[in-house]
Length: 80
Image 1 (spheres, rainbow, N blue to C red):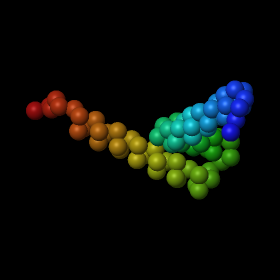
Image 2 (image 1 turned 60 degrees about the horizontal axis):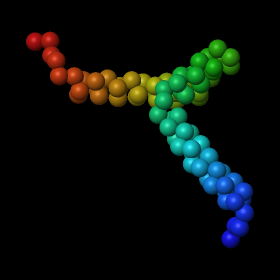
Image 3 (image 1 turned 45 degrees about the horizontal axis):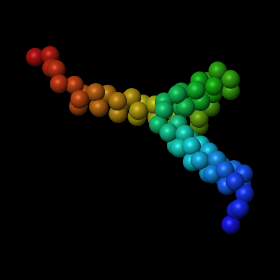
Image 4 (image 1 turned 120 degrees about the horizontal axis):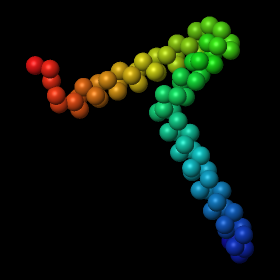
């Protein structure tokens, strides 16, 4: 199909770049900074827009609750 090495390398590079970008965009949904920055930008720059504040705050609270539950499940020392 492609006889040129340049064309093959360009297509290979483009495919790998697309996979990496999609992977990073999916991973970014698991990081709390994504929601925290949006929340702070809304509060400081745009004002109280509850349609933006509430979903981001709920996601952050869910992440905090999940991490606390994970910590409690993993921690073995008890104060007894």
